[in-house]
Length: 621
Image 1: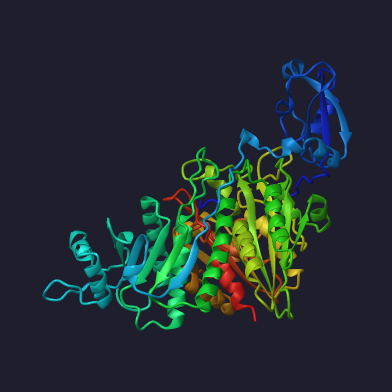
Image 2: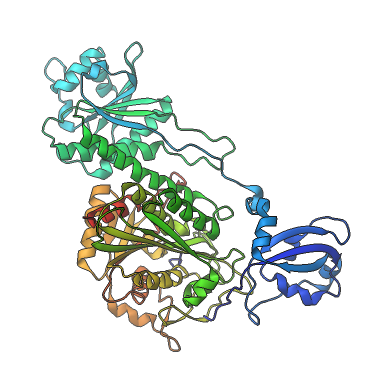
């Protein structure tokens, strides 16, 4: 991700290396073979001339572009290990299978069950419901009382009578008035439900999805505190709601509860498991429509859970190869509608993806270009879409290293948030199976690191559409990977492309941590994303595509530079991406650098998945 303020090295196929204990002195000619990894990381004790360790090395750079390990004379005298034997990558993978399953720091995520909450809509008497918490959604007008101090609202009056005035006392003690965000809970020993709560919905009228999801998250917090397993929800005055309003309201609250219950504890020594087992919506209606909507909510939330886990995973666990494995696993699970193609370095070289490979060149972890394709199980395809996600599993900044206060280099594992959203959407779409639409999910996964084989400031790289780029900042790498990904997407014959990226700090400065910026020259596509976000409650704001700013992106010796000045940084980044999209393809860029991560909760949000899914459904027949 570019902060707010090339001729690349290319890879050869992986090499299997066996190291045996032998003096290094006099064997200096072999050192360049180990380019890209400190020799000390390959050493361990053994008997003389017997293999001491085996590794599948990262592919070495092309001849003439590499840099040796540069061990000092004294270091060479102290290190004993050499005799290198070469073999095929397949042999190396077979021999080192156990090693490849471990990670730097010996960290492997635990298997923690995801929330499994049964959602249902039920009719009947509220007072007969049995469970742990009964929560009532209340508008400001619902809390009015008559001269005797009793609620005027019939639902609250009946319920308050059943619990012997606890609700009346609660509104007084907590000064509860039904405003948005207010909540109050009380214990109820001796009743069918152990706790009762009031949650404010604000003034009467249509409640925005964002508020309803917040309602659900508040309930999730109450369930965690009370260690509740069964939750009931009702409303004080739903009489005038249409069936559509009921469905939309219940689905937003259900999503809020599921996402609020979910905690990614995989990397904790003691992983807590979610306790909530059921969520009943009471007294509204029931039937097939509600069951279908609840199934949809669970499918979308499963995609959000995956996205959160991918973004939360540290870079020593989630490498480009592991991200590709996750994509392949999704396709295998929903193989009736999804296929996966993972391109390696050689295949990307054949496609002339010099911009993408230039970013990847410095890392010991080879890049993986991911392409999932969804095709409906039946019927004709009327619309072809592409979702392109930025996939930097770690971004050090490269030679323009991220340094100083606010650089957040320790959080740059989230620089693959766009790819995580794309894969999360793929998982949801694989379950929903919308008709009439084909969707390509594309990720150019790699790391932006530093080494002698890496891209340097001032290098000129060539993208797969033939355009040349002068790299004036290696920390503006995401747009370089997206360039080749967008060219690839256009070659799939798609009608529309949406790309997502944690692209610029400038967008965070402009819009803060809760709003993503959208950039597009196409008004219709901007409206599609806006309408989709109105359903999901995720926040987007359309930003200008000021073409005059492109003047600052021109290079004297190449077609363009990869960064402009500080002013308008998110706009110039979007203008850069536009150079790699065919004129006949509708395209929209989402800069999600702000909402990808919650500083308050110190974890990933799963932003983008629900809006992407809704957008795909709006394009299906």
